[in-house]
Length: 274
Image (cartoon, rainbow, N blue to C red; front, side, top):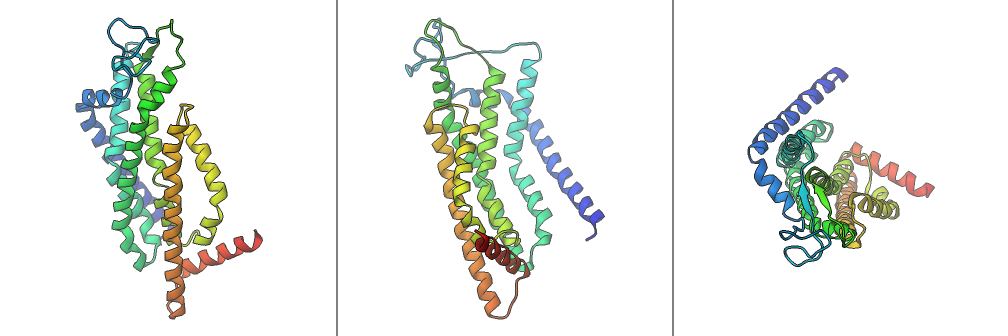
């Protein structure tokens, strides 16, 4: 394919992905009340007539009072929640479009992994979103606990939902790390040797990313994000080693794999320099 054909293919894939997200946004807007209630549910609510420093309605400690500020805030809130729900709900479509754009660059025998990638990428994204939702109660309780006992904490709902939606999207995308690494390995971009050589920097990067992505200061939320990403990175390295071993066996039998040979040579060069 020429450069123009590649750009045309990229444009078509982007249009399909964006179209699916727009359609899902419209559908999510029809159920915006249920979605907003679902996101606000982890927030510790105040009992009637109590201040923020008083115990929450469920007796779990501090609580928060939800409020909307501004005439356009309700509309912005609905739009934000609808778009976020659309990105999550339309993930099967845009993940498929991403794979369909990258798949022609792979060898014929590697295209059989398409369904495996879709079957792994979609549940991983949704699992990351679910982990984010499960950490929201801990995050909100820790942050609200800094409120003085004699003060009332009025929580703008758009600020809270911005935090919630950011955590959902960031957690979901971070859980796609093993899919991306295995995809690069199958394409011959990186080898398993190079991936395992990154483990020190990767662990430090995962810890730093977890500290930034989780706005609360408690270690529980950071561990809930960092631990699964670290385990998924290890699983991706194991899959890459199996794939490279398969390539070596194919090479020994006389069937070459140019992409795999290139990745192996680059990995050996990096290992020799380190």
